Amino acid sequence: MFEFLKGPLLNIQEFVVLSGRAFRNMIRTPHYKDDIIIQMDSIGVGSAPLILLASFFIGAAITLQMSRALNQYGAGGQVGNVVAITLVRELGPVLTALLVAGRCASGMASELGSMKVTEQIDAMRALGTDPVQKLVTPRLIATAFMLPLLTVMSDFLGLVGGWAVAVPMLSMTTTTGFWNSAYQALVWNDLAQGLLKPFAFSLVIALVGCHYGMQTSGGTQGVGRATTQAVVVSSVWIIILTFFIGKFFVGLN
Amino acid sequence: MTPASPNQIPLCLENATVRFGDNVALNHVNLQLLPGETCVILGAAGSGKTVLLKAALGLILPDEGSVKLFGIDTKSVKERELVTLRSRLGILFQEGGLFDSMNIEENVAYPLENQRSIQCPKEEVQPRVVEALEFVELGHTLEKFPSQLSGGMRRRVGIARAIVTHPELLLYDSPTAGLDPITANTIMALIAKERDIRHTTTALATHRYQDGHLLANYRYNARTGRLESGNDSKTRFLVMQEGRIAFEGSESELEACTDSYVSKFVTMPVRG
Image (cartoon, rainbow over the protein chains, first blue to last red):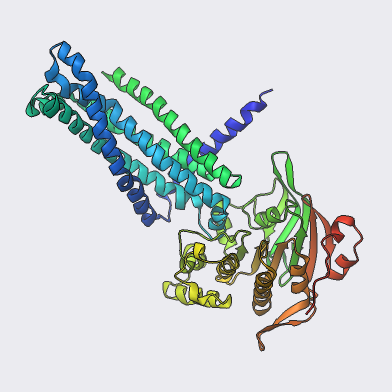
């Protein structure tokens, strides 16, 4: 009767087991430090140009869209406040995570998936290495370290984009007024929320990407399927999680 | 000859059954491989040859029955202990299983550097890698990447990686699949050479009868450096059909078998 639940439940079980092993390996030897550095470079440095460019224009677009409403109420001077709250609380973490999911979760799934279908994962086990320790844990650590950093950079570039529209382009306020308003809008709660979210999203991106990679079967077609699933599932979870984390912090207020 | 004690028997499958969902990949398989023996596993694609080798390696655990490596049941030990156990084995995967992000030297050095039970001193790694690559006549490919080599060369690197640790049991999964006859013969000659120089217990899964015939009828002469005709009584043949063993015996018994499935695998090789 509940036969249709078997597949999804098995998938969840595999995900939980993989996550548990990935976390447990953080405190077990050997530690593959070189792999962590390589992944940090790939995830962090590799994603930075894309994220900085996107963040700048998102900040600019928000300011552009908000300018009419703010000017209507004579609150053009508060533009920095609006852009800072929108970016730091919500858009910065979510946008960064979605971009990293698109770029890195897909990369992890396709890389691990290719290794799985060409028997490299089996070879790794046969030659004395735990593939979770060698492949998953370094990606998890690297993403958990780099995503919050990318988010901070993204928030800042978003604010610069907002400033570029608000001050030189629309003359809504002065440079000092913009940055003062942005600075005063933020409280510790916002910063905590803005850093906890990317940390939670990083776990989702790395674990979902690696999970679908390690589960790949069915040749090159399977690799394509795993890649798509990794991006879709991690993106959906990012959007769901941002609501619940946001709800928790709104409740704190 | 005194019988080998259980912990000297490299491989022993007792009623081993492996299922993938509703598919039975291995069906109550019994197999014992004694030290120095050669076992040629013949079978069509999907008959369970690869699953048998992966079960032998502890990469797949049986749903029923047991697989014992050197007397240790793969189901009764943790993955970490299996890793130690696997250091006594070498395997050549069907697709070679080489790491495409590493060059040939790093690929062959991988088991020496990562199998902690081997504890190979750092200064010994490179000479042993070179020795293994020269054994397969690829000493000049150290800096190359797998993608820069032909299919046959990749298999030979796979053999070098399998033998670099001097394992007691070697498993070869379809080493000649998809190769031209000349390259296939080169690969089989290397397998026979390794077996006869180090007296390694060998299991070879293949769909080509000629591969088994070569192992059963040719010996490597270290003095002349060539394969020479010579019957090997330690070579056994298995034929797998839909996950079960349809035949087990010597080459002459295989050639005499009248079973319609089994006899399909017996093709008289071109002698020369």
